[in-house]
Image 1: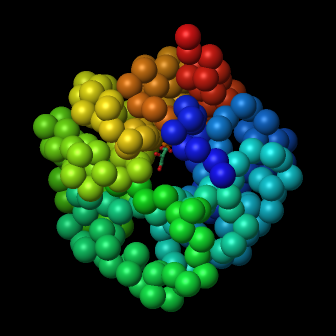
Image 2: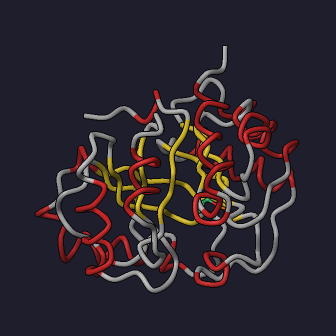
Length: 232
Ligand code: 1GP
């Protein structure tokens, strides 16, 4: 069983985006700790399966981040299940989770399921629109959500999500301070394009997520692995 507590870096690939075999090989063999398959729109069982089979050629751990019940399929090492702590729509907090457990709960291996307490901090991103996050949480709000995840609900993961935009480093530092002596892994994602940004956020987050950069700036994106994994 893979231990997310030991991870420092993951790439998140969108099943709704094209990636050629050569770049996929470089991603999977980059030394990253895992490849997460996930996206906010255009995600189908077909494109999830297609990407999973291609990633499976490599020994890197392969994770499905579930955003719809329809995309769930066996074959991944782990399943990350977001619960959006700052959503205004209860479907994204517990509603879809209830439906999934009712329909598929008996078939799921609880050891492979990891709930992620999401705080979506970029209200302009697709995930924010989908989950009805209506305002940007400020640094104090983010600190409170980190406390909810780490101290109150004691979730395995707190995910500070700025998808598409580089986030507030001071807010990440504060979240890291709050989560330091908890069992909650602090994941940061959003707008990391360069090794410098990876290192900056990686100084605070336990794990950084790199998504769009792999498609838009692959050479820079690939350098983010060494930036956090080779930290002394
Ligand atoms: C998205 O947090 C990830 O869910 C990564 O964000 O695509 O901006 O790197 P980017």
